[in-house]
Length: 271
Image 1 (cartoon, rainbow, N blue to C red):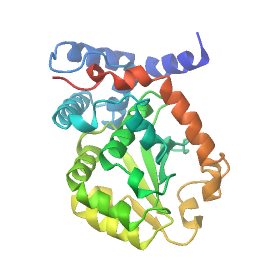
Image 2: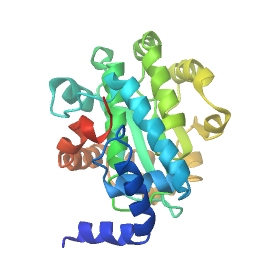
Image 3: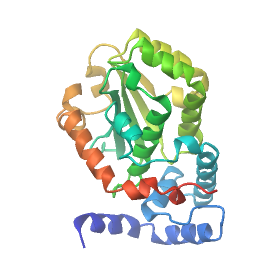
Image 4: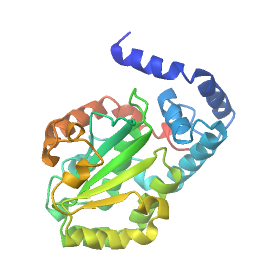
């Protein structure tokens, strides 16, 4: 047995009985996907504080939401030309270390500043793909921290977001109502007037709870270090875990191992 498999088995052992009940219930729900990874089901349970009934409800909501808005949840072959373009334009990079509270950290930033390469629908699809792979990590995650780097966002990027507000609305609804994540902090760095416009666009779509997770760091990164220790952050934010580009390459490589899983609609939606 590999070390990763040992980690998975050790993690699952603690919740084996609860997972069996969850799996048995799913097997009786013909309208739900039947190819559910135990780690994914465990994430649903964790987000719902191990309340099985709430986890069932969240899974139902998630599947219905994906099925209704399938254009951002299907055609997810990461080697397709469309997604390769996004992967090389928008960096969605999970960081390798958890906080002491077992919170996971993900960085979002542009790596190609040419706005003609910025496709809103495909970008949101890519974000959802990366977030789906977080469920497969063999660690217990109690919450999620997002870092949004606004450094290279231009007015043209904003105009593209504004002209695709229906997809932006889907994104905002999904992360607040249907996703198996518990967002505990949202940090915005390299803030700019363009970011102010983006926030004004999405704020009407935000719940009070989500608004309260937002932190804006307008001068350097020291204020962010009050929330996230340097040893958990990349070099770009005066951290020590390495450069984002290298961490991103590693993350994309790991996602290639899950390519078939991510691209199999039967794992996520029902017709």
